[in-house]
Image (tube, rainbow, N blue to C red; front, side, top):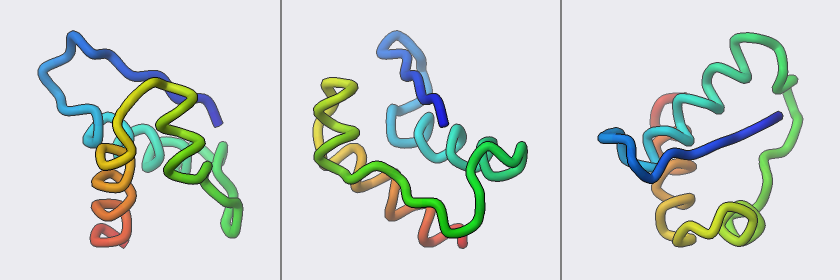
Length: 64
């Protein structure tokens, strides 16, 4: 699964994460049972704050 984030976007980074994961699920790029990168790994890879990643993951859990 490929992810990319735009710092210049009006859409918050955590929301960009949520949308991209949802699209990966719908397109079949993310299979059932496949693990997402850890919060720390994703934060380090994209130079974003771990709380931002956590917020995105929490939103995904709430959305089901």
